[in-house]
Length: 442
Image 1 (cartoon, helix red, strand yellow):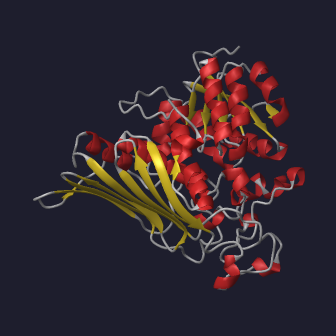
Image 2 (cartoon, one colour; image 1 turned 90 degrees about the horizontal axis):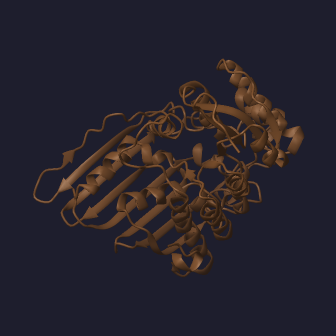
Image 3 (cartoon, one colour; image 1 turned 30 degrees about the horizontal axis):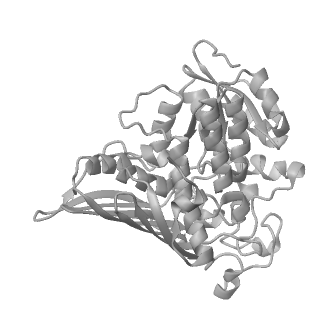
């Protein structure tokens, strides 16, 4: 069905919210010699028009736009080789499966999907068509995470007994999941799926193992109706033009950010989507404080905690082995300034700019009977998820070779998803959940 232009792979993007911007920029600015952007598809014409205008800023001609219900026609008419799926998480499977059956490969933003039936549908389509799905787990490409993987593969701590993993989203970044469509678990699967699938994939990759059983506890402690108990709640539905939001540090001020205004505020008339909902308003069905205990196929265990209302942003990973311990600590922002609280992390771009506040990263090996060893890591930067975005797109679009073979398959996407789904089930039942009971994988 598809054909390449001058040896370049033809790409179409479905879903033109902020998450698409990193991929679009990589295609037209960084890898134009090997990849070509040929079309956009979305439910909202205004958002596609915004991306086309931004293409002009990059010196690229606008590309054809298609309504979402014209997706199949777009694939055929534009002779698409690879589809980039950056839509609302719950709709990923629709476009992935359609693209595979049309003879295209797919790159999907994480999570690959949000529940087991949709996941099964994707895996079946991969098997039926022989096409490929790559899940954009960009954290695999972070130089810190790469070095940790290399050390573990080289038996730096020998046999791994346990992993302790804490992830902190600060009250700027964490709050943003409670303003937009992510706040409804039907759309996103909750933070155990939408956010933590990144982290669960890293553990699967680091351990070279698969999750077997998960026990978890989670609740909505800070946002939603809980905000009234803590004294943070204001009485408004969405921030724009709401007097009660004027001095609310949790309010997103889209009118002050040109790209957010164009992408969302100016596009509201078409679909009624409000990007700036009150994080303490009713209707939040996801958790903001989650603890997980997982057991893996190797016998190792993981304790994981995700907090979405922290005063600083970053994470800690500790790997305990039979010959010592590896410790990674990353501070992405030391605090949230009042001036930055009403904006987004990295302004309007998805993970492409560092926060204004200070940060740091340390990787330490602590072998038995020896002093700790600080491991220096080349290539780490505070921009673009530690430099991971550029490294990932170089492999996806630029034809770069990758000795670590990090491109995550549909099976990898399923395994990361299943840890989160098992955690969600455990939230509901209070019981440990066997991963294989949710979805059986070979």
